[in-house]
Image 1: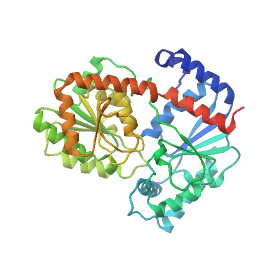
Image 2 (image 1 turned 120 degrees about the vertical axis):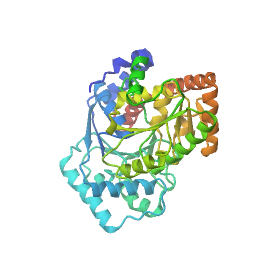
Image 3 (image 1 turned 45 degrees about the horizontal axis):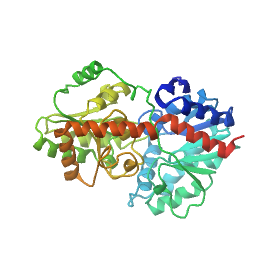
Image 4 (image 1 turned 180 degrees about the horizontal axis):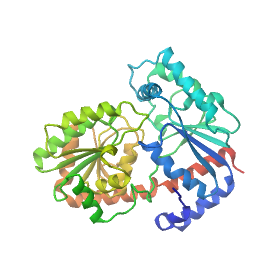
Length: 403
């Protein structure tokens, strides 16, 4: 997929594009490699799919490498992920640690890691730093590590401290006692991607018809992986309370399966089973033919979007909904409060009852939903588009290797 910075002039303005090109001159020709665990399913892959081609368009030699690993490895790294997000019960034994390191050692032999800047994303490829070559190495952590499991934290900290810098999504995530250079960068969405570009109402209605969804009745939706941290069962409980007040309301739960997330299938089954007794709950995944274009259409059909995550690194599904002018009702988790400004772009809630109350309010007051949705679109335009993210990464590259 090709991307050109010139395509964004009509969206972000001439001045912003010229500013990006000026910064890019100072690192033009620099080689930047991004490494993550999967090419599909989840926010990191979504970002890299769009950011890497855009970086090439301004003169960086940007490349995206993907870790190769077995299901056992991804089971271990999912446990590390959950532990870093605060699950205190998890233990990573010696056997698991050995396998984690062995897979990374094999990848270090096969992947292209020779670059001016190497960006390692999330815990899966974190130990690649042990085989560091020339250049600056940066760990980009997309999850909330503000209250990690101490045993697992001690294990991964030994790798983190070898990096030249770390990138987090919020200042609140900076771990205590970690002395290194830290950059704060908000994850972005690409307004020109299939998931976020403008589409016709006729296409929206065609997609709704394909999945048996009634466009003439209120639609509440949550886009998220099937994962305990995303609380899909809580989303169903909220919907059931809303339906008591607004009969006929429909619920869409939309997710995708990524090969680096072994919990996905289990939580999908739990969610389907929990929803089974209730009409008008639609649970859709990439296995049902829901790709980026379908997610775009379905999100634009929402009367209200929910994001009831218990823990959340940032929550790009929130950004996507706001960009489409949809108000969001969400828990105060992770990076969500950076996007959902209470009473301005949506509502922040502390539990199911409060969430149901706010969703009901927005369904009953369409004028309020439109106002908050418009505010959300403008908030995303100012703060969370891929052009701003590229600009901030260029500044970071200048700091690390710039002329």
